[in-house]
Length: 149
Figure 1 (cartoon, rainbow, N blue to C red):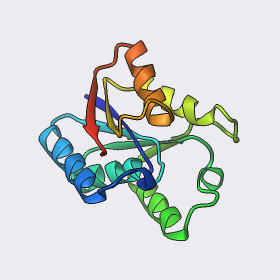
Figure 2 (cartoon, rainbow, N blue to C red; figure 1 turned 60 degrees about the horizontal axis):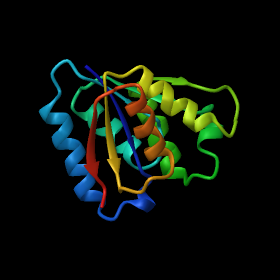
Figure 3 (cartoon, rainbow, N blue to C red; figure 1 turned 90 degrees about the vertical axis):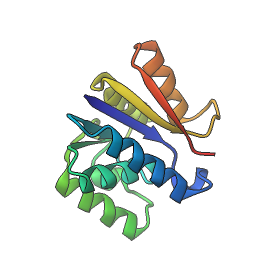
Figure 4 (cartoon, helix red, strand yellow; figure 1 turned 60 degrees about the vertical axis):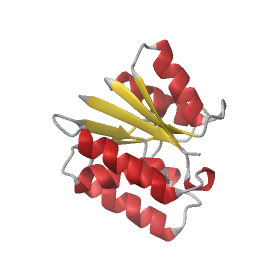
């Protein structure tokens, strides 16, 4: 089963450790014949990718843009972490250059390639996580919500 993951950046998550524990439990419990897809963003995407790789679960990382564009403005340690994760994951650039719609195109590609979506979501009905949930609903992709509150 291919599971796409979506979720918030760390600034929008109150308790990082609770979310990381929930990600670990979800992946550990469901790791038979599992492959994960994340979007390569800071926060949930990188936490899922790191946990999946540690559990020997295949992981795909779909960058919205080339690495240097995706990580523009990031702290060096976040860039290094993503670079390290990319060495262990299958990855692809969804768009060759920056566009306003690039993040949504990446999110749609993740859902299109998945059998299920897991969303780490704070309940706010706006932003990339919400848009990904709405798109998955429109495609009848099953969704599991993990609270990030």
